[in-house]
Every structure is written in C-alpha cells, then in structure tokens.
Image 1 (cartoon, rainbow, N blue to C red):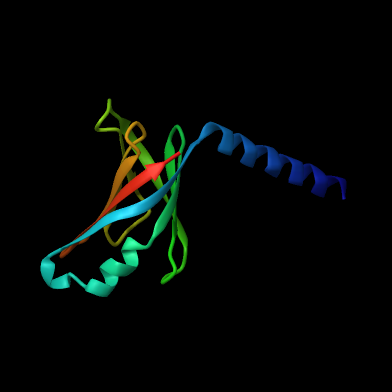
Image 2 (image 1 turned 45 degrees about the vertical axis):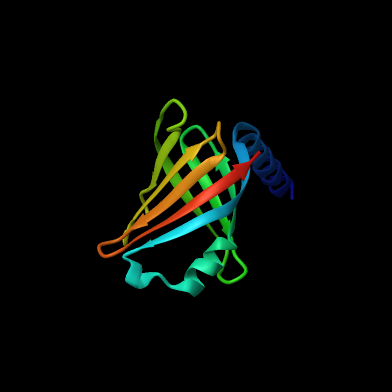
Length: 132
C-alpha cells in the first residue's frame, strides 16, 4: 500500500511539473487546405474545420491534443527542431509518423500555427488560431 501511495505521489508531482513548465494554448481550426484539389472533399474539410486543439509547448517537445466530434480524439508529439525569432516561431516534426511527413510550426507571440501532413501524392494543412 505504501508503494502505491508513493507511486501516485510521484506521478502527481511529475504531471504537475510538466504542466507548470509548459505553455498551454486552446486552438480552433481557422482553415483547411487539401492538395491536389481532386481530393478536396467537402465533408473532410467541414469536419476538420470543427476540430479543436490543446497545445502544450515544452522545452524539447510540443504536445498537440486534437478533439473532434467526427473522429477519435488523439495526441501527436512533435520534436522541436528549432526556435526562431517571431514571426517564424517554433519548427517541429513528428518523427513517429512513418506514412507521411507531419510538421507543426507555431508562433507563441501571435498564437498561430500550421500543421502540414505531406504524403507522396497529397499535402493537407490546418491553420490554427490559438489563445492562452
């Protein structure tokens, strides 16, 4: 029993430390773009325009939690490649995506970001508007 309490306290402390060191943003989808246009599915775009996001910016990673009424919620972890002065902001990539290249650019100063998903025959992008 004592070990369980210690483990729970360690877990609680670690999650509090992560939350305290990350900047957190709530985001909406401002626009969705699909290329090539023959894949410009109106239903796909409408559903994606209703997605919302919770973004946590850490020192080495960005956690993007995606919420949707049409699909399962999920989290993507992006490794920060570089931090540039504004308006360029933070450049990051998800290295675990083996099917496509998944990148995220984010400006903490302006509360804006773009997610780009690039495969061999398509490019999809989501423009996000965020607030702290």
